[in-house]
Amino acid sequence: MKLPSVSGTAVGPLAGFLAFLFWGGLVLFWKQLEGVPPFEILCYRILCSLIFIVPVILLAGRWNEVSAVLCIPRTLLTLVLSSATVGLNWFLYIWAISQNMVLETSLGYYINPLVNVLLGCLFLRERPTRLQTVAILLASAGVGWSVLNHGYFPWLAFGLAISFGLYGLLRKTVHVESLPGLFWETLFLTPLAGGWVLWLAAHGEGFLVHPAVHTGIFLLLSGPVTSIPLILFAFAARHMRLMTLGLMQYVSPTGTFLIGVFILHEPLHGETLVTFCFIWIALLLYTLESLRLARVATRQGA
Image (cartoon, rainbow, N blue to C red; front, side):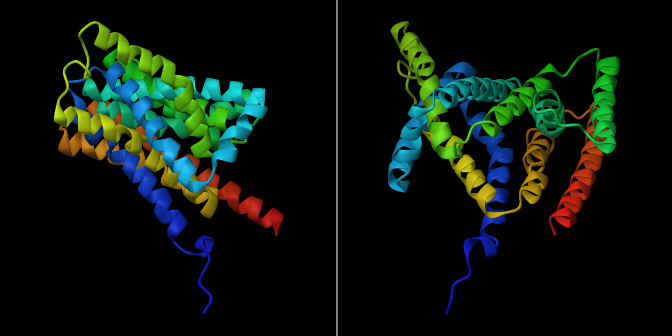
């Protein structure tokens, strides 16, 4: 009996859903490291990711993909830039959790798809449709409401959305798969991460000088926790429709939002809820327009 192909099963969508669910729940993982400074956590996240990725690449027989990058200087330069943006995104996320700003991280990743539209317009000469423009204006109105009622611009949410948007834009322009790309990105960040860890140790500070079993376990796990959802995401991207994968991305900020409200009990003030409502309506319009464009593309390709 002929077995069904992977692309014809639910394995791809399941991998995508698990990746976004994983990302949505990561806030609970980083909460276990509250006693460690955010930048030190970032450094161990980079180092342990590299330690985890190398044997995975070797076992998967994908070292040729990694070494091929050395022959393309432009690709290396792009990965240097993408490593800077993803490193900034990781730090902002870890710092936000340490400051009990989980709801603002959720807002940032809700805003991200709309930031992607703007970046596509600015750098890829993509023209947003009318409905996409309305969605962006609604999101802007939500942010404006927050500024007027709080006197506060959600810089953290925008920092997360823009840094991840730029990361996506850079990775879109470079033909390197997720796993080899992540290897190079963590490798480029390793001198900074390793240097900081050693500097702390030399000054009698940090985990190396004051080790604790609980902290050590979670710092070590930060490598696979970073890499596994990326591997799942890369698998899903190859084995399911990109439109479906795009719609799944809301699982992550929704999970973070629910954790922030119901588990960590962050206050959800009326003004903040209004801002979220603006963003949710904007994302509904964005999603409907994405589905319409997908149907048009399908008809034209038929």
